[in-house]
Image (tube, rainbow, N blue to C red; front, side, top):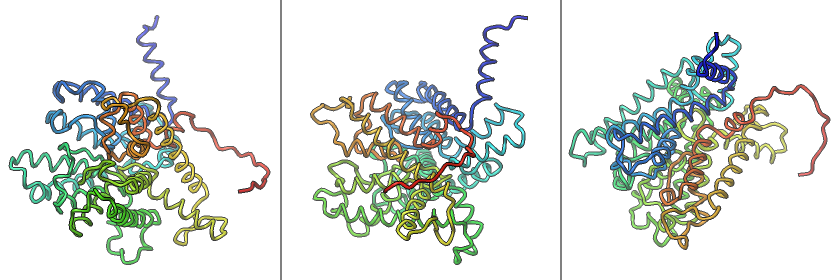
Length: 468
């Protein structure tokens, strides 16, 4: 019997999907989710006529990658159904994209033996994908409880200025989802600037950002060892590195912004009291690394060049492995600092907290950092080709610092904007979309998806010194 063309095509597709590696399948799944989400968000049920396919594509990409950069007004140009769809996309990108990929791969490839399933698990773990397999339901429970508590607090004490109870409940839930998933989307044009002095809103949003950014592994370890926290040695090295790095970066970021903006004539903190300055800088330090919320206007007129540069560094470091944020990760930064200290101490191995770090992890940290730097430089270079401003005169084109800040915000899946994104033409916005996708998936995973996995060689080579 002659096979129909449709059956032949489907056979080729089935054969092709069986040959996909884990990184390739992850990337393809992410692209498919973005494509489906774009069609849904562009429908009349979800958005107004001002939101076309391009605007929907950019917004969905930003939501799936939990970035928060936007070229539309979420509060006015999306319907309630569209806002719910956007919240679902943030949950998918923050909590479920990697884990869902694992489950889907089991269905589409099917009949995988134990050896293959173990290989898949190892491959995913190599790329920092936390919380897969049987722990996925525990991640959902933990996230639901934390977001539920945050919603109740915001509804009862935070957004008390919203008189309509339904609107207040939705605003509380939406911002908790956005915060825990480190997405940074808000329902208001000025984000959270109107709640700059609201300690409840800033406290709840900031806490959810941190809990989502440190990852489920760390949260679970802290809860499991909660009665032994006085002795940090009971915690895993990973947890200790994440917690110490997170606290240190928050403090350094807050003090740094407090210092740099103190000397800016038109700085956003100059007119605030000391307590308000601390609240603003601590919140901005937390959100700069991962989430993208802001309680102060962000632009080159309101933030000093030194402050913007400090924020670029924080965005580059980002959140922690297995969390909902981006960046090179806090543990990568910690390993780089440990390697530097070991070099200065003339050690042949990297030792952190009396634990020797495997050389393969150090190589991965160096590779991740270097590849990320090169990719952000490439993004900035592409953004500077010709005129990428579609909404402002060429004479008022953006500065290099503004372009670098926006590219780092996209790659780090942060979502902070200094007024650049909405004024870019489609070429510039395409550069940001690619950067968001690569940043969320991970630079090493994308490179592995492109080049494929190669078996480790067993060949030994002669050693020779190189001058440094």
